Length: 454
Image 1 (cartoon, rainbow, N blue to C red):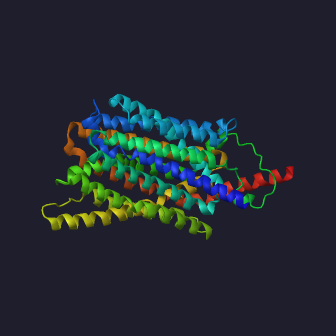
Image 2 (tube, one colour):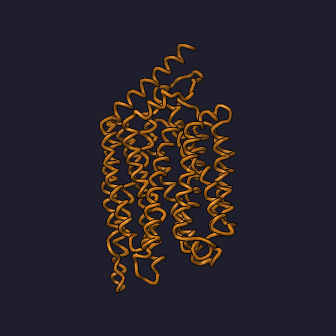
Image 3 (cartoon, rainbow, N blue to C red):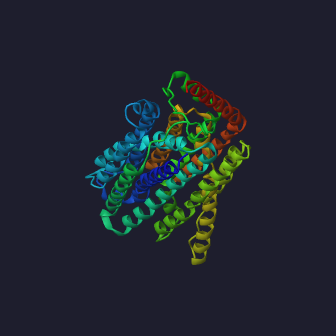
């Protein structure tokens, strides 16, 4: 692999990383500005906020399915880079237009349209990363993408919250405007620095292969059947669906819920600070989890990826349950200080451990899926997350529209579902090594086929 290619590959990954960061930066503005939208955006209701989330998730599912399956077909005519540029421009533009919304219905429309572009990111961007890097490095790279997601959402919450609180009725609009400007600059950076990955070149079976890799990547029905029969992928997807019910829902309502729980004059500031500091645990957890998975992979202990993820989820969800459900005492300054410290520590550890699985799950998708269906496997991950988010948001928004006191019970429910869903990681524990071996054998056969043609 030439030095020039490695430099260009690094630039491409960094630009994808930054685009992912900006997408979640813009997405983080809404949760911390629910109160401002209710107050300053005409015709907005609490149930309407839930509809915004559910609608964007539904459109995101449609986009994920289209680009997960047809993305490779479209790329036969246009490069994946070209498609990626246009789809990213859609969500960047619509977040800018959202800042100009006249009322709730315009805002809803812009968010829905933006979901078309955002939905394409996972099948296109993550499949390109899988084509750029070998299996021994994928856990780390996908972990870095989770780092980007968490950092972007956190920065969106911070800046969105600061502007929403201190810039008056226009604060949330200014936040979206900033997201649009920086997102556009990031897309320009990708446009002029990114390269198109070459499939199979990073696979161990094609190491030192000097010929041109020209293989028919047309997706067939048998390819898709093989993906859905891959038990390790299926087990993880069920777990991801359950985590989507909790994660997407909590991402939307956690700050709103915690602000209500803390009976204090400065509740919103306290909650935002605690949530950001605790959530930063996911930054380190995503990278460490991915690195641990890669280390086990290099040593031949393939089940290590699964064990790291499963233990991380069980420990992390248990800690987060305490984070969300234990009372926060504010009667005296001493209680406030000790509660603040306790919740930051327990929340940080919870987010740290649950992030262990993020890089490893995408690494497993890449390792047991043929190159032409990796985008479909990644798309299915996004599909399950969005489906879970739809269910979770509908449950919470419908419950609190009738009675806001039901919110703690809804939070408990989604946490229990998440914990039970994590147990489905037991399935890849038994099937992942065998299915990885089967995929590697197919790729080795492809190299033999190409060498016979030289």
